[in-house]
Length: 167
Figure 1 (cartoon, rainbow, N blue to C red):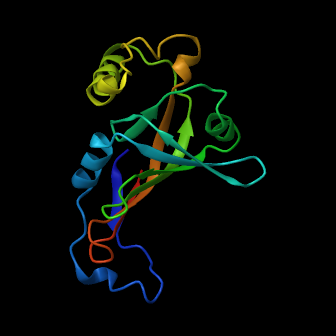
Figure 2 (figure 1 turned 90 degrees about the vertical axis):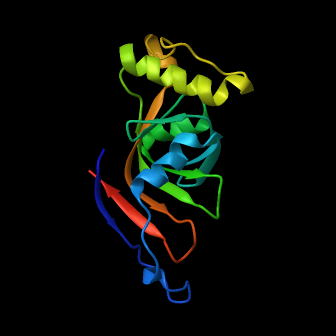
Figure 3 (figure 1 turned 180 degrees about the horizontal axis):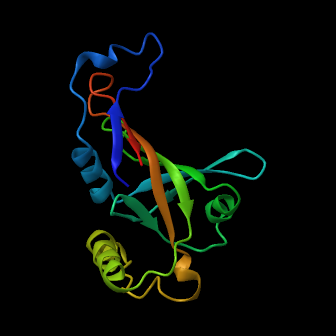
């Protein structure tokens, strides 16, 4: 996924002057996604009600990889409606990613090694350190990958609020 367009979002009157400061660089926003430990994932239930759940995961190659049981509510929701939203915990330096999530083909080789190393870097001290083959077998370890379609981020709202759109 490459950033196709960077710009300002439409904001209702009363939210402040959006065009008053510089826009954020995608590289700085992406660093937040790489370094975050906790992510919030929002999906939609079959009856239209929202569902939000905290997730652990890794941001690699401009995609969010996360795993867990296919029996969880969010995984079942995504099986019906792949559209979702990912949000980091920080509301001051906010990062919100919209996209679609799907079960990828089993992960092997170099990507498996990279994912394993990144999970270990972030979560080993919390008791989670999957090996590089954790996502290579039947069911791929409950792995999902979120491909972004757009993102919204800021560090000093509304001065630098920036919208990113992806190919």
